[in-house]
Amino acid sequence: MAFRFRPVDASFYDLFSESAQHLVRGAELLAEMLSDTSDRPTVAAAMRDAEHAADETTHAIVRRVNSTFVTPFDREDIYDLASGLDDVMDEMDEAVDLILLYEVGTLPAELSAQVEVLQRCAELTAEAMPRLQAMQSLDEYWIEINRLENTGDKSHRRILASLFSGKYEALEVLKLKDITEALEGAIDAFETVANIVEQIAVKES
Amino acid sequence: MAFRFRPVDASFYDLFSESAQHLVRGAELLAEMLSDTSDRPTVAAAMRDAEHAADETTHAIVRRVNSTFVTPFDREDIYDLASGLDDVMDEMDEAVDLILLYEVGTLPAELSAQVEVLQRCAELTAEAMPRLQAMQSLDEYWIEINRLENTGDKSHRRILASLFSGKYEALEVLKLKDITEALEGAIDAFETVANIVEQIAVKES
Amino acid sequence: MAFRFRPVDASFYDLFSESAQHLVRGAELLAEMLSDTSDRPTVAAAMRDAEHAADETTHAIVRRVNSTFVTPFDREDIYDLASGLDDVMDEMDEAVDLILLYEVGTLPAELSAQVEVLQRCAELTAEAMPRLQAMQSLDEYWIEINRLENTGDKSHRRILASLFSGKYEALEVLKLKDITEALEGAIDAFETVANIVEQIAVKES
View 1 (cartoon, each protein chain N blue to C red):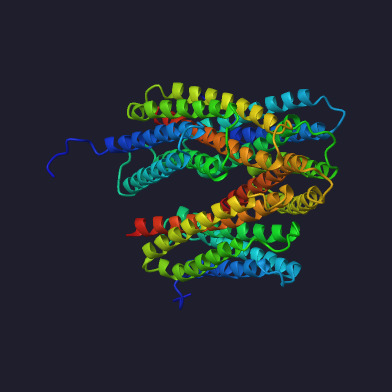
View 2: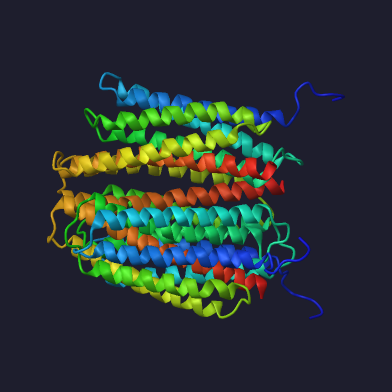
């Protein structure tokens, strides 16, 4: 192999972009899941496939770190970023799975605000991953994800207040609380990803 | 000390085997706890002792890493494996503790399927630990634990569907859901252990 | 800068002391929150400020590690200790936030025992942080935090038994269980901090 057309290091960034694309897909499926008119079992099956694909990408990143002598940035940070992105997918998958399992009918309207936050976070993350190469504008990414997480936090509190308002029966509260907490967990997981990206940017600056 | 009869490195493997034996014991006690005919306070006391013994082994591993200059495999992986095994024990101890505390009567039949999965995972882990020395057949261990975790996941979903079927009162659902989640947590913790073992095998290959 | 009046390393210890002072403040606010006569929204707002200040201190520690070539003790342990202290604050903030959000009236008396444990843990931690410099009496700190965590654990179990005694309606149980679990989480988080301090002391001895 006299020369390579594609620098080895570029493929870490390609794999991170791939991870982020799974999150865009996952957030899209989550939005479909919220709709009353969707065929929920079908959407849930598509989500399972997306989650498996995301797992594959995470494993590809880990295998690459284990077999690369000089990594583009700190080895531990590559693991943390890969596993942070994977955690977001797991939380979104959990939310979809519970909506199916718990046979909830129409979900409280405020839950779609949370899913829109997740779609926006996924989009921003997909835009940020290629910028890891030049360490460009990652502060803006981190600031915006933090702002979105704050709005998600306020939404979450409003949803909880509504669940306990007396409008819902105890078992319904239990189910909707689990789903709400999975959505909140996914938003928090995006904030963890943004913090890792920020850490990488700081160390490489 | 002119020569040692037992290589220093062997004792890491002995300690990991010891950890895994605690998990076999813990899963056994968990099975007894499920039975209506057991003296639950006595079984729970035995579980507390097993959990303390498991803690001792975990501390022994950590002390050994801190005082060993050349470790048989990556230092961070030794910490992660020790603490991963400890996490399984904590989850099983939590399940036993809740069964006692919540004064549940007859537990849903499907919960014993989960405990059988835990017993099988503990057995496989006890068999795998000595194989860390020669890095032998660890792929098979990882594949089988993953398969068992998948069946546990399906069981978990069936149990949740049953809890919310209307068969149980709200407070009973809350209690059984906590116990079920501790069992699911223990199975997931075994999967985390298997992933760490796989990582070690990959790095050492 | 020809010479420094204050050794660079001393500021890690100052920052850790600062973190611990936030925990003393947080536990104090949590105690106020439990009282029926407090203006809960005002106390909760003060807690949010304390949590933000704690975040600032955590970030200051992380920035210092990233820009210091020779750290007073293991770099990973500095991160772990900073983030461990931050976790305690987050749990206490969560408890305060839920007490406000869930509009609970008079809280079960046993909850104030938990908050007293947290105040004692915060006090001990504030006393221990300066001792990191000379690695003095850290065993005693760790032993006492572990003892306090054990009493907290027993209290937690008594609170849960009381919640499920039939005295409370299902939705009230759900709310009080969440608050109780945040308090338990904060006590466990102090134990994690003590374990990290013990690890540091062992490595440096």
